[in-house]
Amino acid sequence: MKTLQTTLIAVMTFISFGSTAQIDEAQILKESKEAFTFNRAQVLLLGTWHMGTTTDAHKSTYDASEPRRQKEIAELAEQLATFKPTKILVEISPEEQAELDAVYAAYKKNPSKPSSYYGEVGLLAFQVARLSGATLHATDHEMGYDYPSIGKLARETQNAHYNGYYAKVGPFMQKVDALENKATTKQLYRFTNTQNYLDFLFNVNADLLIHVNTKDNFEGANVAADYYKRNLRIYANFNRLDITPNDRVLVLYGASHVAFFHDFMKRSHLYEVVDVQEYLKD
Image (cartoon, rainbow, N blue to C red; front, top):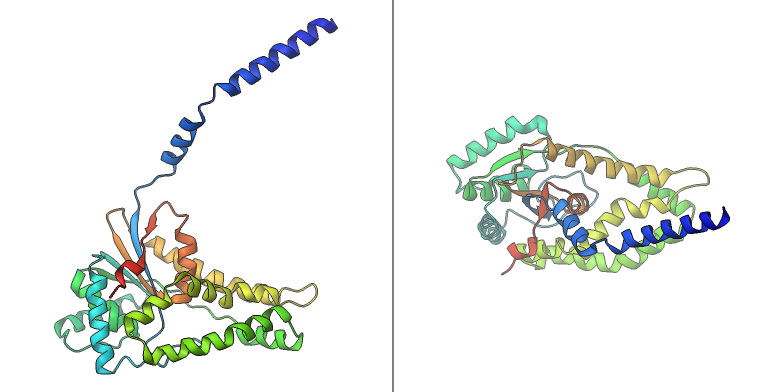
């Protein structure tokens, strides 16, 4: 009996190894690639600063009313229009879609007069839409988040990670602020949409806060989660739209939101993010 058992084990082992040897790994990898290859809509993610009134903690000193800025914005709009967007998604709540449509219609009757509607929406998105024939879509979702309390907690608890990070990047951010008056509009957009700067915005608006918590509590993590939640809800609004593989989508949003959209969309079977820097060249 023992001999029979030994023989059966040997046969099973041989069959097991024989089956493994017959696996065509190259074919499996090929099929795997094909299984996860989808016909996707191309998306151009353009992170911006807010050119008009904003509730953001950081207010830009960029003056879009200056004649040189008007000229630069018009030139940038022409360049972005070469992407040939069919839909432009902007940082306005869906409840204001009718107002957006009405203001845009009025602008098209007299496009020589720049619109300041929602800052960069009227100044840039309107021009790109007129040049390309794209439709405009209000997709924002507004939420509040208590950043001041986390900064206060970090100071009170002498949080070395949080405070040390700001001490290190503080001088750099002063240089960034100086750029707002010296650099051209296109240069500012090129910088704002670099991966390093988007990662910085992702960090200071969410991930850095995760390090600020008292014992057995999650104060910083909860506020960070609020920012994740807002961006996920905006992304959900994107997905409510009828976007097909034939669409070409321009997303014009505050750069900190765009940092999140990059993260969400790079794994999506619906969207293919194209390199925005290709449309920001001199």
